[in-house]
Image 1: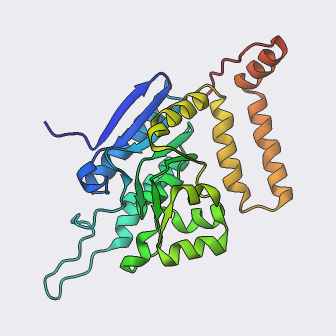
Image 2 (image 1 turned 180 degrees about the vertical axis):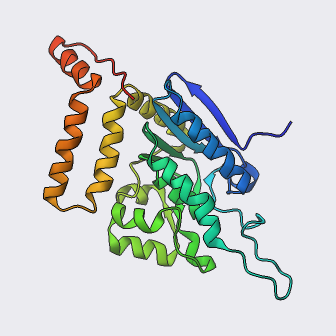
Length: 267
């Protein structure tokens, strides 16, 4: 029986998806893309899932694209046509980013080792990124004559500002997890031995919070980057009107007044 390329584990309302090509540092192939997309779709459509954790098996989170995969490996034959990397982005990476950014639940990345190229930006597409102290982030694209993809050109300037983003992208140097946390690229750096427990605790906390409001916060902050203040204020009013009519708002207020823990159910 073939080993699955994405391992799926459930703990209460938290679903953990673990990339499972450890011998290849969990680098992407068309098969891994297909299994990860299917796993994300299944989590999105399962009403019992209220938070997703994305991590990797073995000593890496994800080393990016597997350059030996037939979809991207240059054909050594004289005169062979070059591979259409734009098609690879459009067919695989763009849908993956879109799925992650539109998940109806929060997504936590637990980065357990190197996150390079598309693997780095895969992590940064998640809502909150935790990394072990020995982990690192590498925008490796410039080393092989490419630009950051998997949302990198959009994500990096928004996370760390244009000057740092351009330096990280142009130089392609290894960025240790502690430095990534210091400059605001990721949420938190923890000791390696504490990573799994910290990710599980964070995911459990998020799973107990008002899911619709958390997802709306992600969407509103992303949208506001392209708005002026007046437009953002109007969008906030629209979102609050919607959330104010939902059950979680009523539950939150009732729990606050009764001095009890709320039980949120909306998704």
